[in-house]
Length: 72
Image (tube, rainbow, N blue to C red):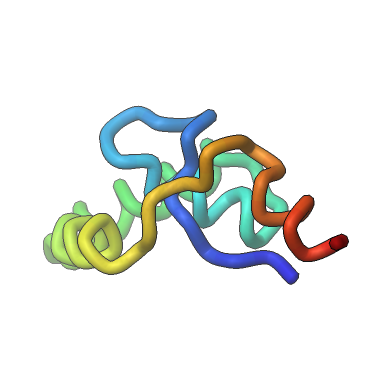
């Protein structure tokens, strides 16, 4: 089962967009564009990003570390 975590691979600021993209299986660029659109449409994108950077757990030690634990 996938867990929503910040990304260690697609990490520009905090890895929030990369983590969301990994979780939903979409390109990270689409998620970043959505955050920019939300920011331009009233500033809610910045608040949402900051909240998610605080709430989302840090990435696991490796890109597939959590998946390996689930299989054993």
